[in-house]
Image: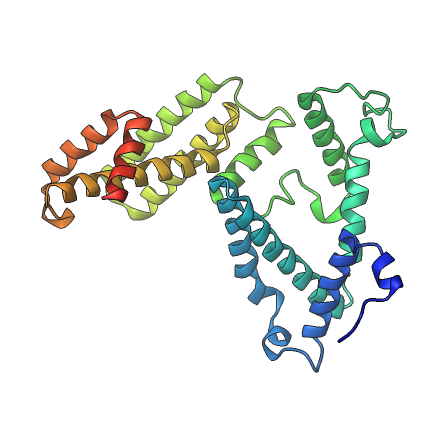
Length: 296
């Protein structure tokens, strides 16, 4: 049995940096010739779905308010970041240290009101900026940085194509709004939604699948930017709507089951009546009914 020495007892606990370095070293070992065959064969392309999956699982844990799960999922996402960086380090592209240095420099550069700065176009001397002013300053600095980057020669360069499409549509609209290309107020966007909806009706009447897809895309793009003008995150709004529909439909299943009815035996008219009945319940009543059904 090994007995801890006095030095062991007095040693300070590992820091966050120590623990992060341990993760980096483990990943390096897994990718080494005497490491793991599966880890060695991974590429940036093969890791792509894992990165997306872990990011969505982090969001899911946040939405559920489950901080235990959030800790676990955040660790998984951190693993994917270290994994990607290790592959890039092996190709002599960059290391995880380079990525860390870059984001630290960016945070300092884009917070001149906290860390100081000599740029006269920023509010470096002020520490009382409102959240809106901070955001405006961040976007102003980011736009100026982007203008000096050769690979981002146009305004819309740098918006990831892999973003969820509603979010990307909102980001595109926000980017062009920075140079004044935008609707004046939400009402004008609603008018544009009406216009796009009319064009979609015409496309449906034409029965041309390509035309229908195009017009439906135009409608969705406009709705995403209506959300932006209303200061609503379109992904969050749609996620909430998905959740609401799911809860209500499950309530329908429970109401039918309480009467000995199977879902597939119900008529469309019966389903519609149940839907309207569930909609009429308050959120509290709906939750009480759901819990009662779960306890029975």
